[in-house]
Amino acid sequence: MSGPRERRPRWGKDAEKYLLPDEPPVIATRRHPAVLARPLVRGLPALAVGVWVLQLDPENRFGAVLGLLIVVGALVYLGLHVGEWWVRHFLITRRRVLMTSGVIIRTVAVMPLRRITDLTWKETFWGQVLGYGTFRFESAGQAQGLDEITFLPHAKSLYKRLSELMFGTDFSTNPVSSDEDAEGSMNADDRGDGDAREQHMPPPLTSGRRHDTAPIPRTRPPS
Image (cartoon, rainbow, N blue to C red; front, side):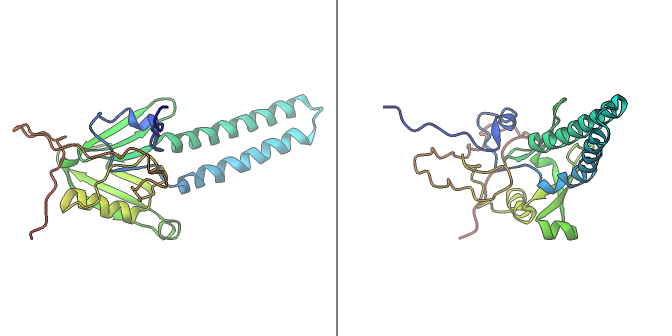
């Protein structure tokens, strides 16, 4: 009999292909579903108008074509925004910060973790109510594509975990387990399956040459 089948992490194949083989993510999440509020507010009324025009006078060919175009346009608009939300992942490893985005044209923004000099976390009123926030990164050198990331779920937990990884003793850098959900759950334990293989963090690079993408070494608190 074959052993238990290894389960893939819920943050998915699409994000996994941008990581190195020895680079499991410490944080992996999609943006909060609240990012879809504005597209829904715009798209659903247009969809309703299109359906209304279709039913207004079915015998009128011009009205039917116009209503159909409005419906198709609204569905494409909504589909693109939902697809963008689905494929956009925010990933942090012990080496890099990554953001994947794009439905038709894929973009991957990368920032070495060592280059981050400052981190700002902001929660608006609705962010506090719904549970999302904004990260603002400042880095040494040129402006990066990861200067500001909005609508991050569980922003407080993400902020603490990233701060521990960057600036202090990191006691929670377990990689995302095979059951880590992409909605930002911070529980890195395996949920209910004792047979799932545990992932381990890669050891720091031993080369004497310093690299911006080398893992940040762990520090131990003084005894």
